[in-house]
Amino acid sequence: MPAPNMRIVARVLGQLLLAVSSLWGIFGVALLVNGDRTAALGSFVLAGIFAIPGGLLHHFAQVASRRLRAEELIRTRAGFTIDEVAAVLHSTPDEAHAFIAQTIAANHLELAYQQGSRSYTRRGRASRPDLPPPPPGPAPQAVSAPCPACGSSAVPTETGFCPTCGARADPSRAPRVRG
Image (cartoon, rainbow, N blue to C red; front, side):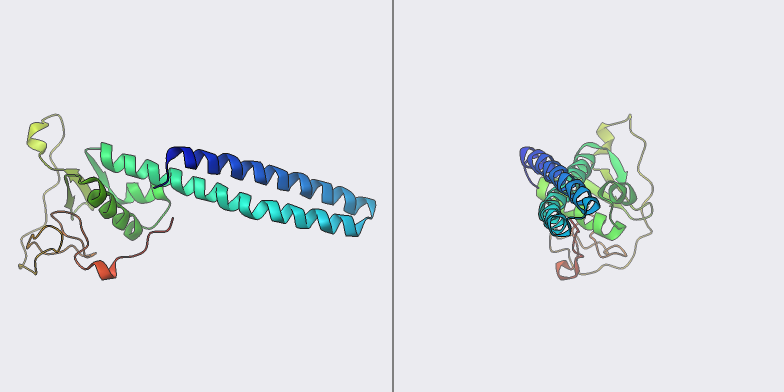
C-alpha cells in the first residue's frame, strides 16, 4: 500500500497532466478549425503524450484510495461481509476475499469467517455485549488436512479459505487482486 502522501501526489500530478492534455487538445481543435492540419496533429500528439501518464497516475491514485478505504473497513468494523468489501474495492467477491485474507495476515487481525453469511466478525465478542451475536456457523463436517497458516483442522470453505484464520488453504490457487 503506497504512503498517503504518494497517493495525494499521484492524484494531483495525474489531474495536472490531464488538464495540460486537455489544453493541448483544445488548441489542436482550434488549429484544425483554422485549417492548419500539421500543427493540429502536433497538438493532438502532445495531448496524447500528457494524457497517457496523467490517466495512469490518476487511476493509480483512485485504486490506492479504494484499497485504503477497504483496509480501514476491515480493521475498524466489528463485522462486515465480503460483498461490502468488494463494493468498496470495485472488484469481484473472490478478489475481495483474497484482499481480506491478505489484510488479516498483514495486520494480524482477530477475525473469524462466517461461511453461512459470507461475512467476517471479530473474535472475542463476549467482552463486547453491545454487539449482536454472529450468525450460527455451518454444521460440523469431516476433518481435513491442517491449515498451513494456523494449523486448524477445520474444513476449508467453499472458496478454499480456512474458517479459523481466513488464510487460503492452498496458496497456489489464490486469485490475483486487481489494483
